[in-house]
Image (cartoon, rainbow, N blue to C red):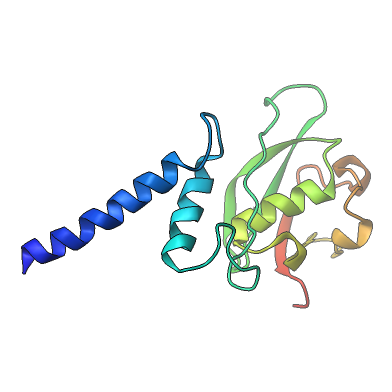
Amino acid sequence: MEDNGQAQAQPQANQRDQSNTTAGAPGANPGVGAASSSSAAGGEGETGSPSTKKMVPSLPEEPPEGAPGVVKVSFRLLDGARRGPARVFSEEHTIGRLITIAAHYSDLEEGDVDLVTSFPKRSLRGLGLETTIKEADVAGDMLAIRRMGD
């Protein structure tokens, strides 16, 4: 029985290896190969079905700590736990960028995420996605991640 299990595992490993090598040229997004192999195994297309696959964003780069105009912002997850340490942002980064990071942390799509300040309690999405961190006055704040509609 063990030989049969090993024989079945081998073709699956080869399929993953082939998906990763066909994912693109050197420097291509390493996540593409992994997504392709899982969707190919499920019989879906390379990008998957929008109704079955979340579009969780990747984390953008942080600016160097200590650079002029750099601020820190902390996040509180959906379950109330702190997501630490605080992330570094330029004060010119937007609410949209904060929501991208919150979506990544909460495993939600960006359109399903809102950020709420502690005091006074207010929705950042309501300020507009192009509003800067400086304009929103949230430098140094702890922002609670909320699912839209909650």
